[in-house]
Amino acid sequence: MGRVLIIGAGGVGTVVTHKVAQNMDVFTKIMLASRTKSKCDAIAQAIGGNKIQTAQVDADNVDDLIRLFKSFKPELVINVALPYQDLTIMDACLACGVNYLDTANYEPKEEAKFEYKWQWAYQDKFKEAGLTAILGCGFDPGVTSVFTAYAAKHHFDELQTLDIVDCNAGDHGKPFATNFNPEINIREVTQKGKYWENGQWIETEPHEIRKALNYPNIGPKDSYVIYHEELESLVKNFPTLQRARFWMTFGQEYLTHLRVIQNIGMSRIDPVMYNGVEIIPIQFLKAVLPDPGDLGENYKGETSIGCRIKGLKDGKKRTYYIYNNASHEEAYKETGTQAVSYTTGVPAMIGAMMFIKGIWRKPGVFNVEEFDPDPFMEQLNKQGLPWHELFDIDLEV
Image (cartoon, rainbow, N blue to C red):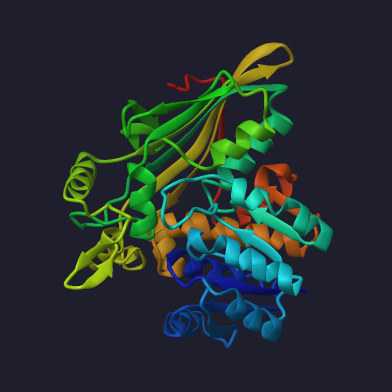
């Protein structure tokens, strides 16, 4: 029914490939490609059954991508490579008439900046080509955006405040490690915070706003307001929102390591000279930190991610909390990865399924909340990410 090409063989790519292979009534031909083909081969071998073809590709090189696309002829590319590579992959899709899906918005290598403008600028090109580009189809962004659309469709006449809450209460046993690509993770959490209020963006210092929030089956965890990319599209697509924030939990030991990394210059993204060789400190740091893909075996505990929403229904005030809890241990049993990779990879597969089935398919560039949330929500329950709802409770925010 559908030929898909997955680009990226990290933790998320591992999950996407496993989940696509579990749904071969939808995905009839599957290829996994990355810069390092041996990683793809290892994932394919773990899945078994000769279900997965593999290939080497340089996702920074449009011509290299085009050669692969013309050879395999995918209907859809699932991009779980680095955010820096979004635009080259989109360019190759346009050149070859291939549809596109990703989990994280483009950011330039030289600047830690989340902004959709670069990808939204492709709207006319994809529309004129009759191709679909689905942006931000991980968990956050992704499921959190679909949760918001589902709430607006079924439970509210008017959304007024949105607080996305992201807790990882797991323990991997390492003094310091990041749950996904260290270079992207550290850039994300060390930038200034930002949230939407009364029609404008309010900027904060990193981790300036802190509050202990209670998470289901976990309890209270220190949560910090940071900027996250889905806020930009959600306030655009749900203009009644008076305030929108993103909260993430961090342990004190993690924050201490992070401060040291910043203070000694290892989070820098500009090049420095070392022994006559130009290196980027954060890329060197990535090379010596634990590989996020190797954390799963000893990871205990769970994640809890959801949306806490206030608004109006039938003229009355309403509060609503929709969330998913995911177990690190269960994720590892199924895919050999930890829950952070699992919660990103499963929605990417579901988004691809929505496209292949013709449910999320229209020419242009779209964020996930612009599609019908119901069939996606149904698949979350079937594919390993069940969700739960609480009504008219104290949201704590």
